[in-house]
Amino acid sequence: MADTRKIYVLNGPNLNMLGTREPEIYGYDTLDDIAERMEDAAHRAHVEIDFRQSNHEGHLVDWVQEAHREGAHAIIMNPGAYTHTSIALHDAIKSITVPVIEIHLSNPHTREAFRHKSYVGMAAKGTIAGFGAMSYMLALEAALEL
Ligand code: DHK
Image (cartoon, rainbow, N blue to C red; front, top):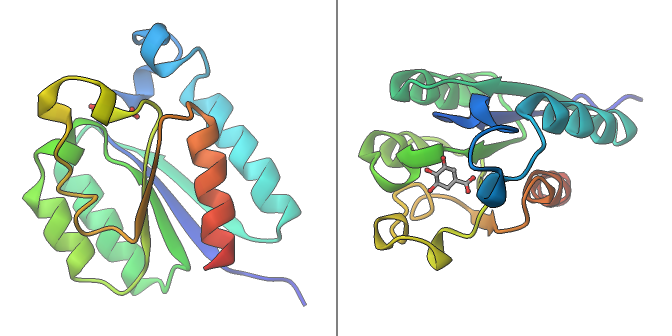
């Protein structure tokens, strides 16, 4: 029987600019490239991916709550800069039982001090950072094992 587990992949602000945004830090893959690669892997693993991006904090909070309501298997989230500022996202993640895997393309700990604190990471099940687009694929692998 087909596995209908659904995994939300939520992307925060400025990730729609991937490909041209500081490629020496974030790489040359676009968000569409990453989405396509994840869709392929999800298809092979017989799970469903719901891949989204927003520049608005409230949308991300709404989507976290939606994933909970919909009984999602996991949330993979690159919260962009909201990682370092959003108590709202921290609280949203604490409010739900769906495991959240925080991801980053870069390794924020090797960058500016203001990126060293993660409100999302403090509430997430785990964090994968620093592997470029591969961070997304590693998170999918982890989500499948949960
Ligand atoms: C993406 C961003 O937009 C930054 O604000 C974070 C993260 C790092 C990333 O590496 O994917 O600091």
